[in-house]
Length: 508
Ligand code: FAD
Image (cartoon, rainbow, N blue to C red):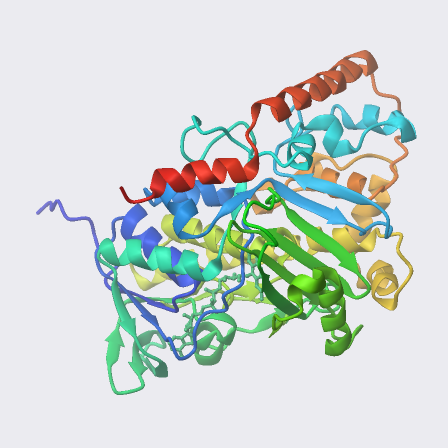
């Protein structure tokens, strides 16, 4: 007999209440309207509490949760982010911008050869093909007060306070029916077929489930410790394995807030500098093979200046890499339990969003065989994404012209560069990157991002053949310059727009 009730996945149990766990809980309960979702979190263990920079996909994710932008901005102490400004990466005296806006003319390829031919007199690649570089340098917001929620003239993401974001997601998920259990998992009970049957908490509580999401952070309690999924380390390519983080107050309440992440290169790593509305989040990501913890702290303190004198720096240790299988049986890893890269391009939260989107499509009720087929697909796609992110992150380092420290020299050593990236770089000496270099569905970063990094870093391409359309290209560059001036004039100051949203969300 036909029934109106859709087939059910049973009870979903999420282990972990960080950004991954609560974003999953909010997505299951609010976006997908799933009824039986339980989340277990441990205040004894806590959350990692960093992870302040996001990617533009977060707007679609938040809109899907049905929240108001003003409420989110105020509850998560969030600000707008329009890309990353890299300072001192190619040489210690240069900077370039990786904006979120796409270049004019789509992926920008038609204009690239003309920009290359223009030689040293030209503006930067980002400034030639988007208005966003001038917008951020002028401290402007990406949108105006009258623009609809989660959209505006500029492409944008957010910076936010990770702990406040998790609190906010907890509140809206519990209101949507998610059961929250406070407790520490002491043991994991297996079913005879190898699936996870239940989580056994210290104190004796047993939490049964049909599907388990492992959002337990670096500990990877389910996917790693229980199910033994192997970890592929990428430390030979991406050297950084430690970070020191600080929360730094502004020197005055109306200090300007940068609408972008500032990533400054140092002797053995780089600092992130993120402006929230009430404080800055600053951290030094470094390689323990290339510098001691004491030297790293001295570098961070030098960067922060007197504002950091009375502040403690918190150290985080990590291993760069990913789990080969992120879905095994009835357990799917999301977040740090699945893998982690240094936060250079905010891939952490974006990979959580990607995994959740895939789970939404692939996880359906069915037989064990259907679930295993879905798991194979998920694992293949996630592994490919992680591999390609390694390549993109390494690009930021390996074409440096810095030779001042072993860290930078080692980063440019061909032995540390993945073979596929070495092959591409050799070709890109004679032609710009092409869409045919990429399998777009597996990429997190599309060709325009490669263009921004390569040419921002001063990479030289000597095209093998002349390109028609030089006059049209000159006209396009002139239009961008004029549009940049108009955008700067029409967009509000970043802090002013944040005040506007703050007033909107204040209880009356
Ligand atoms: P966690 O926040 O660690 O949460 C794990 C949860 O599991 C906690 O609730 C914990 O209590 C619970 N748990 C663990 N074990 C048990 C147990 N036995 N019983 C019960 N509960 C348990 N990402 C970005 O996108 N942008 C960034 O700018 C960025 N910066 C970063 C900087 C650094 C230095 C680091 C290390 C990471 C950064 N990340 C960034 C990554 C980002 O922080 C994470 O992807 C994100 O916070 C998700 O973490 P999580 O929820 O997987 O883990």
